[in-house]
Length: 271
Length: 116
Image (cartoon, rainbow over all chains, first blue to last red):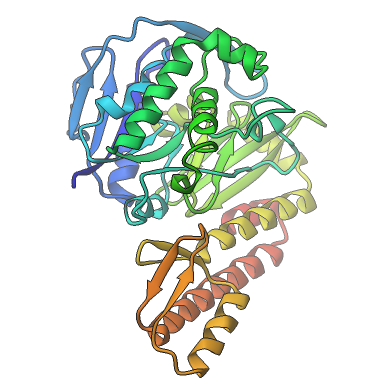
């Protein structure tokens, strides 16, 4: 059974391939698994970091505003539709899909390949700030179904997962309808929502016994926070405190963290 | 960016930083308590260890346990499983203790962050 990691790095104004290189180095160090990158341009793997480079043409374009801390924001293109095709794109029998801004600092996720489960996703998450209560990351609206992050998930190539990914694509293709049905105000397509809806439709009805979670919790910072230092196992942040408009120094060791401020990752690694 | 970092360290509250780090340390500890055996996930809790000790005292050699996802897992040698789980628990709590001590004895924000 082949095992590997799949990273989506579709360049826009933001160089996701640069982030993928940072991510791939950390994956090699902590998980020691082959990494396949999905790109949309003529990317050249100069450092030999990737097992395979898959080039796709994502023609569906959205725009979104991303922050670089609390004081700076930019509207950029957002090519996020391809993740729904992870099942077909992955060259591996067992695949762990990671966002390029999910920074690995431990071997924790290697357990996904040992648990003998078809599909795994995080059930709970931890905001590194203790001052925020981000309800939007708990349920997809205040009265609706559980929110799952599509940032990290594991799947095997099984019939059930083929159905799950077909369903995710069906939700994507009928996005306006599902936005209305699930009372989602944001009309932009979000993988987190599509995965949450598909999981709700499939696993909570006919196959709940097949559904399992990645052990532990997903740690994250939002794009209003800054990553300020990074080494192999430790990350330091300034966490935005909107109550008194200040920044709270915070650090973690041996924990993988979803660092949503992509600009700060680039700054720390390249400047 | 340097000025932002300096200012953040200047005006942040020591207690707020300490409380934030203690919370994250506890979350990390919860994660390190997870023990993986034969495709199952078992959190090394006092409750589980006490139960296994009771089973051991009955001289039962193997048993089926429900893991944290309620998946039945066959434990073929309870003695070994108990010893491994106990070692895992001791290692995790020791690490938690020393990390906790390091950050609570820190007198400045810089040293708290340095000691994480």
